[in-house]
Amino acid sequence: MQPAVKSSFDVAIWFLDRARSEDSYLQPRKLQYMLFFAQGHYAGAWQGRRLMPSVFVIDEAGPLDPNLYLIFENGRPNVSESKMDEEVLVFLDAIWRRYRDDDPLKLDRLISRYGNGEESIEKRDGSEIAVSAMMRMFARDSEKTDSGPKMLRSATGKAVKVTAWAPPVKISTD
Image 1 (cartoon, helix red, strand yellow):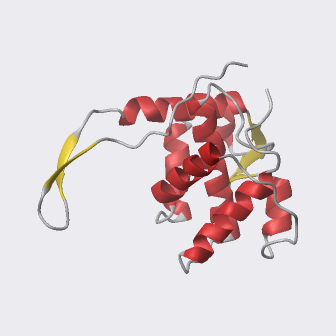
Image 2: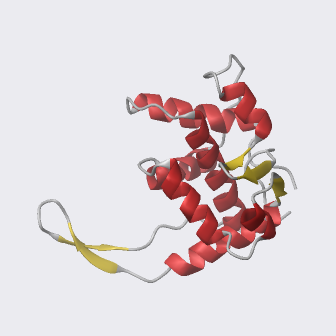
């Protein structure tokens, strides 16, 4: 099954541009976490389909696509970009909003929790994290967070019904 986007560079650049548009700096390692969460949630929501053609490995410092890490560690490279579908852009925006304020240590703890029982996550020896493992990890996340609507108060004090975040789900016909 082909990934939803042509190049992993497009997703990485989208995250960097989004951070810049909010006057924020996205550290190379946090960028890797964002890319991993995007790939994982996409695989969890679309039955194992890859968001991008990336391979992630995990070590004591967390998950990373070694090729993207090397090229982005000194800043944004000069590469041409491909246009991404609106559906993908909406998905990336949801990932950004969910994780943008979390520090890498918190993201690493989430990965350990989601990856409980996944051999590559538990060993952290530089092994590849299979897309099937990501699918299991993040499908579990959707199941855990689907606790129904809750009532919270807005900044004005008005009661607002909210539900847990989950990526949009699309059934693949491939």
